[in-house]
Image (cartoon, rainbow over all chains, first blue to last red; front, side):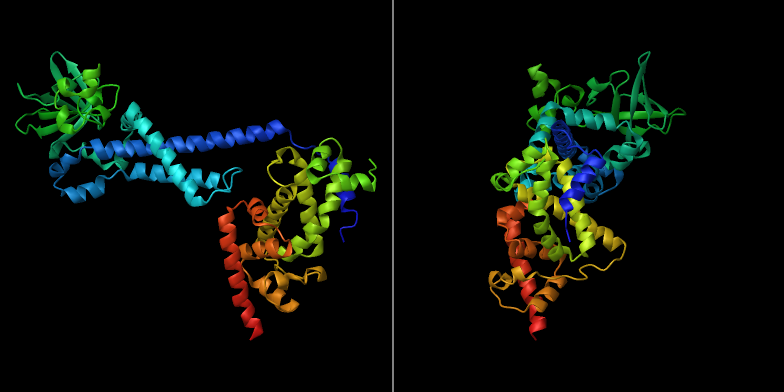
Length: 263
Length: 188
């Protein structure tokens, strides 16, 4: 047994003209591995930042329009989609690094803690830079995403006083095209309209109000306007994030908005 | 390439590995140095038939040769090579499981390893040890074989199985416990 095994192996190597794979091949493999791992971490961080954004600045006050209790609404509207994103990408990262050279020697619990720490740091970066807001706003134009996000889909309920869509301004008339392509003529109060500054042509907005049942046309009486972007009314329309505002109440007008002040 | 006995003794594994990149003759020395160790390791761990073991060893050495440039100098060559052999064995075990071939059909311990009993601090008969070893979970059997048959240090086992040393310690303790529990059955 095993007699001349070395000869058999050498013969096979020579017969099949086998060569050791080049060092650069392994370097390349390692680079690809760490790039993929970094991408997973970035996605986990981004998911966490959007999850935090929704929890902090989501429209948690609209539950009474939907005839729901705060608790039920919270359970329905919790950003599970983003939580799933955090978990999936974090688990993928940990699976990849568990047996990787240079990391396998560390206990899995340490790897998990370090992974979560990196994800939290990345999430803070995304949140502070406004990236989470942009990502959420970008995805919210997608129908499937809106379906997976209860708060977003709640705004497609004009009969319950919640309407969202793209604003068109024509000859001093404000028309909102909702996501079902239905056009609504907006009836604005003469004064005291919260979010009036958000009335910008071609921008997406959310409106609280009610259908004008007395009109033959699709008319919607506006009570409050909110930016389609997730965040406080003023910060949401700017490039920054909401981190400058100490709380929601401190940001009821542009003069009080921390980011606005900085500009 | 002809190498005299003195040369064979002088080279460390790591030096031979470097030299193998230029000359397959040196690689054959590595094969010669490790083939029997791997044979007994696989025999104890997998219980494969001799022909299957030879195939696993051959495939492992081919893999080692192709991956020479991937050797991590922070490791011992033996740890790195055992890792490759171990992974190859696991692949073969899975393949045989899929084909429903019986595993561990003729597990045997060579006479040189009778001192296993001392290492495990128990004096047991060879047959009972074999039967008990067969019954262990795969992850426990691999660790018992590496620690008490191959006499590997914890760090080496950690490098071979790519697990933290703490996990290795825990698994060795659990494996010993499971071994003792199962062994009791044969004592009774």
